Image (tube, rainbow over all chains, first blue to last red; front, side):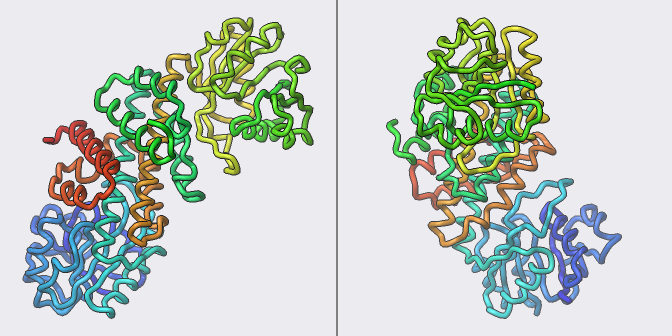
Length: 254
Length: 254
């Protein structure tokens, strides 16, 4: 059984707490936050504290905190015997250099409050200063997920960047699609099977191989007709830039 | 029973032929193409012809053809009693003005050869010159799908544009994600649960409401760190433009 003290009460902390509560190998023995109010949802299920001095002895101190306070909190845990770990995509392992034992437990997923998440599918990116601690993190991950990967800090930064492209930027393109529907009295539901199939296709084939559309075909008459239809200057810039990128990537004339 | 003559043998024609073959209300009595070789896969299952003069009498002449030959072929069918229909997102209904009875049967989906498609989920966008023919197209659609919508030519052009944003452009962002993985010795599979969840989230909430990431948070230190990591000028332009668009859309300082 792995004893965890969880630091933080935000989206990631809340989802991890829930996931661990269904695990037989992991128990969250305490949750820390500086604000008492945010601890309320956890206080019925485990011990809580607003004081770092009162943290219990644990196998792992899991910091699901904002990037800019991770180092400050980690430094206050440097005398602890347990493994000090954060869940951030962007903070490198050597930022925890004052801790004797340190590691990373980065879930590569988008979390929103009140949206349920299937933890068994989430890839956890693991890294540790000491080889034995990497094994401990694998045990922690396998308690809730079938997917975990050994990823070093340099790879993790790149993964975080890739996630911005395939998640945050993709979601903005969905927002543009929804706006077009709304402005033309069409339900957004009409686009959803296409969105779903586009996301599923790339699990069967490389995205470059299944690229479709007017830019891929070099169909300039459709491209020009589309540009005339777009009212928003920002959407028009996005259309032009992505069309150019797809044309270049597939060897079409600009 | 609706008798259909299918014109075309490409991706859309092939998938429609397959879908109709499982329907009890629709039968494809003939397939036309100008090239004999492309008819071969169909010739074991139904009648085929390379001559427009030899088309059988049918309830519907369904043209799953390239945009630039639709009008030419439709004009050659103008003496026919059956309903002349195309499957294009971009060609307006009045392009078929010489036909007494005309309509649109536009499946809003991305088709790749050798990729199976669940037809029951595909939204069909229907339009017809004559109200009775709209009913006929509804019967045709309901033979294979639970989703069909009455969509006029102006709305359909906008939908086609929206599809470019949420499918073609999204797929290019997936391609960038795959490139980042490949260049850093990471398997693309590691991004797939995130891609899937991003696509599923917008069926439960509006995409604008579930936007996440550094641009949404106005987190300029992460944004600048990402820009330093991007080697490709095209990817860097895309990062900057979409970051600016998300910031603007969510009221963050540029």
